Image 1 (tube, helix red, strand yellow):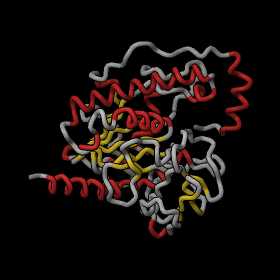
Image 2 (tube, one colour):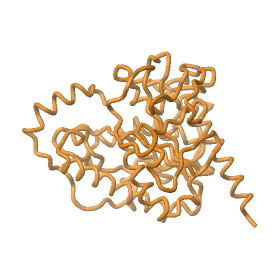
Image 3 (cartoon, one colour):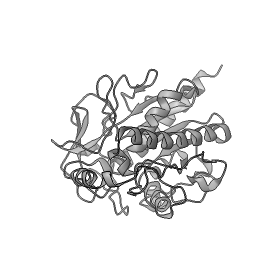
Image 4 (cartoon, one colour):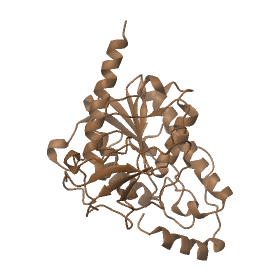
Length: 334
């Protein structure tokens, strides 16, 4: 998002009364067609790119899978849902988000990222009924893609879910409605559902991760410079707010020194920058200091940089969790 929340609210008040809230496409998306995936093993993409040659990874021998649900990039004023034939939308996903976010986990898994008719930025500001319709369409696409992935590709492989912002809104619903029904506890290593307000009672059977190697659990955080707040996060907290510190992978509220920060990747995506920030979970938000340069932000709100600020921390943590998950599987065999 390139516009501040205050600007968007002002524009909404001026323009939304003049705008039709339609534009949603009827029907379902056929995820048997490779063109409806931004990334999958059969689709060439940029999700193998990382900011240094030594970090590049071939997915041919990946030990797990990553199902990635990307954040809001569609900002058309004329439709509440993205069109999968919109070339600008597809390019933003394939050439920006796959690289800056999804590639953080390409060291552990094959990347699966469906294009979906995500809700437009403007849908957040529309009427409640129009907003619900837009998000139901987005969710239905992602759930259909996830079901297709499970049926045709998973075959019992360890699974990570990675999502951000609107993608995390959808991931929360996906896990609430399907974690038990689809028996995901058998395959889920961890869900990194980042940039969404989530509580300790959001899920009936899925708990927050409380240490660096726990499996079948979820982590989340929303990043602000110390003392800041976020107007870009959504979600309703049920129970106590969950914030897992990506420098310690704990929920204890302890400040963790930047000496433990393994590295962020700036917007230029040309280098790894370690030891940038101290971090502490406070009042449900991840407070960082000092405020880093080169990472997208809106004042003290670093929502847009939730993932790439902790790119290497996520990458290394996934390795540790996958190792533990594989050990648990071996130990459970008769």
